[in-house]
Image (tube, rainbow, N blue to C red; front, side):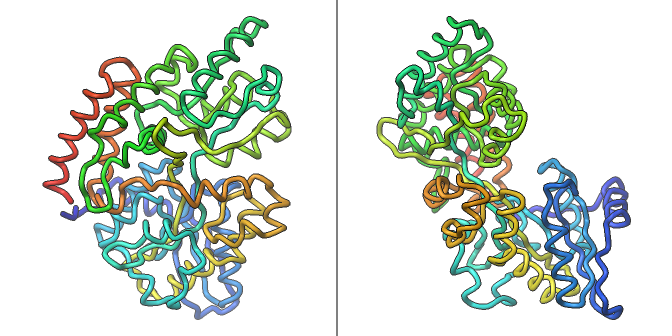
Length: 429
């Protein structure tokens, strides 16, 4: 069941402001078509306008760059109302990895405009994620996956190895936290992770559950799989961390709070995304040169699983120039542009061969370490659940949060969650 959207007066004003405030990248040909592209928040880490300008200069077209809200939730809301009104004001949209299934009715099939082999060089899981009912509705731009950061100096000091299981992480974190506090650092914690009730907790909890062999909430056929003992055990183990190896404040921590704890030297382990590597090893970091990165641990009956993240480019069905818009998408996601994005901004490419590129690896040696993690990454069930994904994720992170805060045990949570998802599935996917 697809949801229709109507552009509210408030969003009319926001969109008008964005478009009027957007920068126009003017090519030499005054008669060229203009393509409007919704990029990121317009900060210095947003490479999208740079790539768009290069395309404009090479093709003789004009590009209007639209800066969108930084919050993914606000960005999605704007897109839904914009597309729901069938507006042609924006041609190309930068979309989160979990949005194609929600927005696909409003997006063109890029395979109608791009070469047949356009997707061959990309990570297959990302192409699969962006293919809805055999329609390629978005091209992968850069990707992310959850990773484990650790203090290699402290592991060496206390004679511990990098943990391969969540139980090993728990035991090692307990030992070294006690030793560091005994040495005088009362603010030191064993493990920092994202525990707030938001999408980031869905990513963390999916890794816990999947790496215990507990499935992925909803399988590829749309069957709800969360109600099982391994999933319950994963959530119970995570709950045991709160107040022991993780602070009570973890219940309200997102990516940046957890990075701050680790980067200030007050955590042994950190679960976060690859962007942390360059920051933790940069100027002013208390842990520069002391950081290692490894695949996330796994349960006793599973294997390491990292939730995939990242961003893609799609073309609106209401674009007046879909062929040119698709051409711009192909340009930005090309190997040349992804290489530049990786070297200049440290973003992880979605083209597999770039993980063997000498210049990419020289700019960020961690790229080679994360390659295997990306190839084995687990996608959130956004494609199969479509419009219902936001409700699926909300239910998952809210039940998980109740387990972490001690309101529910794992078995009760997965039983309640399974029933709620079954009801959603019968109605919405």
